[in-house]
Length: 303
Image 1 (cartoon, one colour):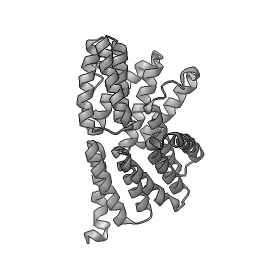
Image 2 (cartoon, rainbow, N blue to C red; image 1 turned 180 degrees about the horizontal axis):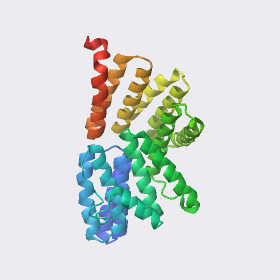
Image 3 (tube, helix red, strand yellow; image 1 turned 30 degrees about the vertical axis):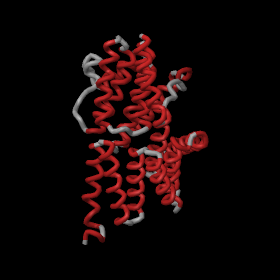
Image 4 (cartoon, helix red, strand yellow; image 1 turned 90 degrees about the vertical axis):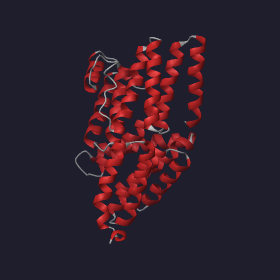
């Protein structure tokens, strides 16, 4: 995915040069989708770049694509913890919920799908698991009501939300409620997809598959979980997916807490914090800092 960034940037410039504004703006939308969700580019830098390209899109009257890019801009605001509304200028001052309601009522499937994916991703990363599960279910309803369009839009966004859906499923499956079979099925489907994708492109998907496998082994109380967490961390670091390295550290820390290994859990929470700081995801940094503050007095290193 990192290798594709420059190609989309070049295509944006080529579109501008030849007067093909639709081609230019669509490529910059692909660029930001890759940068944000695939590569985990620095959120502050991404936000500045998004603002610049939104203005270029408006200049050339590419309002439809600008709306999609504005959704990406809102992702940066949400993860950085900024009280800003990217929709205000491009959706008539509407809130995110109002934009989603508008898209659903007017059957704008591509916009509805993108919003559901965005909301699910942000809610999961910020730790609001009930909201993440709610929007998973809502998107499944959307797909059920527009089967002919359900497979459209299989971009990086689709691959990443499949990954996130698997993690959501495993989180709820571990609660062992009445819906455990449902969520286990969601996770197993995600693992099946990720296994196939990792075979075709290990660079992009190996760390994600390892993390899903780790969480699945955690569900099954299988000691293989630890080695899979460590593999995911190593793969994410080597492949420069800093944001997902942070996620893998945080998930391993949670697993280690379950095993009452406080000292090693603390180290991985601290490593997660470093990754999230590099990503500029202040909301995630603050969440991990709370875990560190609670855990530190329990560790032998602090006694």
